[in-house]
Image (cartoon, rainbow, N blue to C red):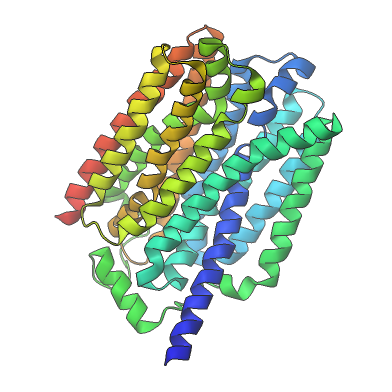
Length: 413
């Protein structure tokens, strides 16, 4: 009996690690283009508004594709969809490496968006089917941490290779090799990603259903019936607003800090990395909170309020320059703390048998938030309103907190 339990723990850990690696790879490709925006401005004469549109193209395609990918995952399984998505990233890197102008960058953004589309429905379907209920909160934490690490790695990797070689095309070639390596590793361990059956056994499945607050029967209504659930749309709205805030930090915190505080690009380029690493640290703590707190929306509200306050203070413009950079990075702790609670809240709102569809639709709110916010914040910077980047991000975070609060109340009812 002890050996069976240990085997289940080992398999859970391996599956968490593999899904975490895949998720980190997807987030790495979120940042495929932004770290080298200054290079594109220099070589192709582009504006921040045009570069913001590249981010919008990525997330429009990803958002539409993500909502549709949930149906594909529920029908044919998550594993083949996951491998196809990783392949799209490799092609996107090659397209970026060979770009000769704005249209080439647009193609790379579109291909990367297509690759990003299936990740959340695929990842969460595999985790919900293969990870035992007592470790599911930690699985969500690992999933979130790996995403933040992917975001944190991208600027360091892309800028580092570009600086070392003096050629940004080489950086994209190396990114393609990185994607191929991840595909090879996941293919080698593909049995641990099999979502064709529930590997947790009857006990794990029953516990998961009880945790979900719903009966363990499959969701046998019309495939689109989940669209009638208000909690699903509230979760979508939560992602839209909080991701709008994240878009501001990811794509424009560096130039905004340069304009507002006069910090050099050599420092501000790594503020996003600090934000993501702080977010990863927050997620570690958030993974333990999930199992100990019944009203998850309170954790989300407190954590996101902390992030909003730090961003708002940064936008005031009166902090010492290094303290301003530190405030932006530390705001990631609040965002990270909320991550596992957010994912568990969505699980509780999802009817059994509709996991892929619900996660696909809800997480498409992430893509919509990125797509709408990027050109808005880019235009603010072009107009010289650097403080608006931080104040806008804080306001969007507060609206997201309100959405999460309503989801928590409705789910308990």
